Image 1 (cartoon, helix red, strand yellow):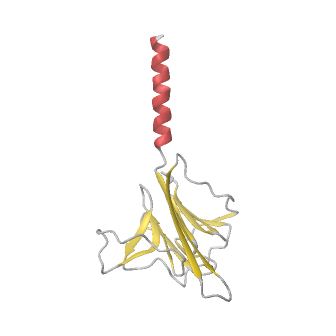
Image 2: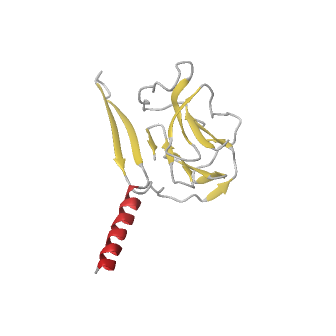
Length: 181
């Protein structure tokens, strides 16, 4: 009976550890409604933080893989770089706003113009004085993934998702929203 109770406790402990993996997910969505013929505008902003045991899985797998260290979305609005152990994407036009600048980000540089994920740990908003956008970089067609080292970024009409394949952390970025996981 002791052996069985020990096995049950071990199984419960393993389930707890697995359930707590994956960290938190933050999704920010900002929607704007403009009524024609009226000066009334309503803006709704929603931020949701949840904890999940798995990162969200893209609905459509990529149809093609390429090896591009820098690329941009087909529209050119998002530019990404997979260099130096970091996957980073910056965006020009967006309907969402970043959270307040953290004290660790100096006022001399930009904050929230993009998202990045490193070699370990969750993704975060960018605090930097440069940009990952390079207008001369190739455009990554929708349905295509760029895989460099441990990082893979997938271009879709809904936005770009970049993931560190070692720990599953990453981000999604689009005009309408962003998500850190």
